[in-house]
Image (spheres, one colour):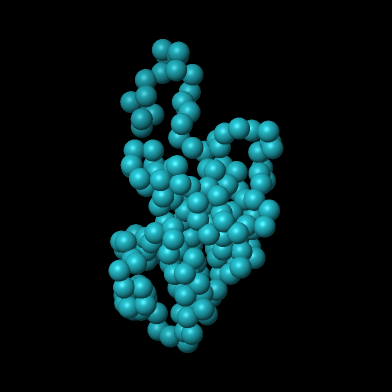
Length: 168
């Protein structure tokens, strides 16, 4: 078992993937690494299979939509946990909305199946190599992805509410 912390993990990752780490930050004590969608699978496989880091539990896989970030509108966020080292890492991969595609993690984590389906269902991100990528919670005949920030939150004809009072 290694003595892992954010600094030692970051040094090991940067040594293994020189030039492939887009950015890093630490929020609330959690190491965040941003990689390109093309490199996400390789980086996560390395984290899982590292001889002492052993990030062998995919805690969560989700997505975000930032419509104002041109070229990085959609992002897939992976939360990985090393149970042996009690250490966590967040891996992020952002992509243009028109190219919402990233490799499936099912060959690494069987539990990614439903998480990827849910992310596809709500955000429209395609996971290449997924064996059964279809809607999981919404109706099959829906022609949109409801968590994309493309729709008004409220009835825009209402005059009795002012957005400034609701943090918008």
